[in-house]
Length: 386
Image (cartoon, rainbow, N blue to C red):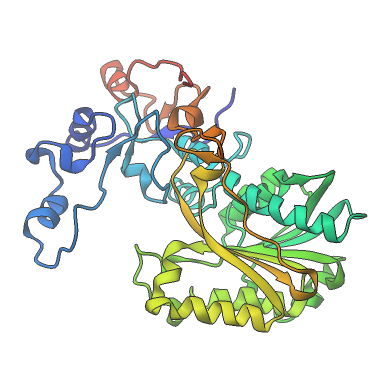
């Protein structure tokens, strides 16, 4: 089996010592103090502005639990459960639910960003299937519903839309708009020309309805507009500037497309931190704008693990339905930490995600000695799904 992007990077002596010392589930603060990174030691012991407990700098994943949130920076934080190395981009992609036959294009840094910024596939699929079920009730004769993807990234939501099925009906994404060239190449190689992958900034499209017509789709036939506007300005990891940050203004661009096309449905997702910006006033403003455009809106935080992803990642989802068609709602969870009368499925684990992967390669490792190779890769054992 070919495992694209399944390469681990070599690390320095100090980092390798920390990795070697970590036990399953342990973080940087669990290590002997002499192994702490200088910045971590300062944060924990000396920083006068520190509020709260230690932040996450490194953790060895527990194979029998879902992982913590995958971000673009987990490749120097998430240590493999059994092997003394950081996880590979492919392993991170498995935690996000990406199919193995998708190859991420571009540099290692670009690949990490593409994977970390994506919506877990299983979560997106559950959202799209919930809307599709509503659409089939309103338009029972239709088998295919046209959709437009904005801020597509590497295709987390696009692939989720492809996978969503309900009563012999499906979404047909006719175009995906993304400004990052590497993301476009990644998604284009996977889509195999089944949709238009366009490398452009949506702000440059002044008339969304004419744009659809240029692709052979009348706006009246666009059932769904979906996307995840850049979220760094709302993230807890960012400065939470909201709409004052140009990236935050992209939500306005998304809603402009919705206004000009007037689809039956829209789906917008973002980081959970958006809800707390300016004490919730930003969220109120967004919801008010959506309602003024003529939509009933259901919104809320969804945990990817609740829908079959091997990851405890929470995302804020908005589902809009034109008022004359009622209200499509967020999906209900189908997984739980332990099965019960309501949820029959147990959370998927890191072991589940990594099952079946072949041994990884070591970057720049063709000429490294056998001792170093064994230390980085460990004694490989096929993953056993429990």
